[in-house]
Length: 137
Image 1 (cartoon, one colour):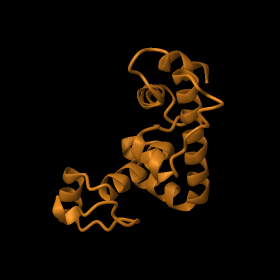
Image 2 (spheres, helix red, strand yellow; image 1 turned 45 degrees about the vertical axis):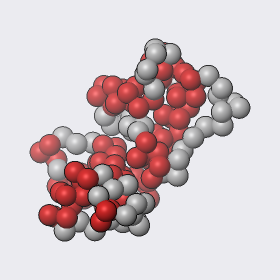
Image 3 (spheres, one colour; image 1 turned 60 degrees about the vertical axis):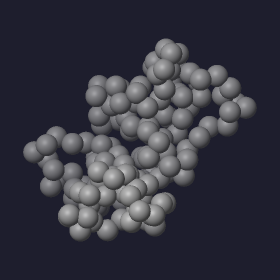
């Protein structure tokens, strides 16, 4: 919490950048808090009445994301463990695997044109309904 408050106290820095930096230091512990991940987790947002200032709000949001990702990992432990073994040579943490899966799926569902192109070529099927008319992109 103190780290996030310190980082988010800097102009233009939110929990997204702070979590990415902290993830580099503690990849087994820290989930990345970006909009796709938060959206996939159900818009994990703290109550702004309890956290009215940017730094404490961002700190709380980052910690809520980390807790939510931990719960996703526990619910999907067998799959995550299997992917972790398959990607062992790349040294990707389980937390990062969850982040990648959530992020890519969110990008596809939100119609991100680059990911749509890659997914179409690879015949990817999203786990959720598209949030836009991806055919129009």
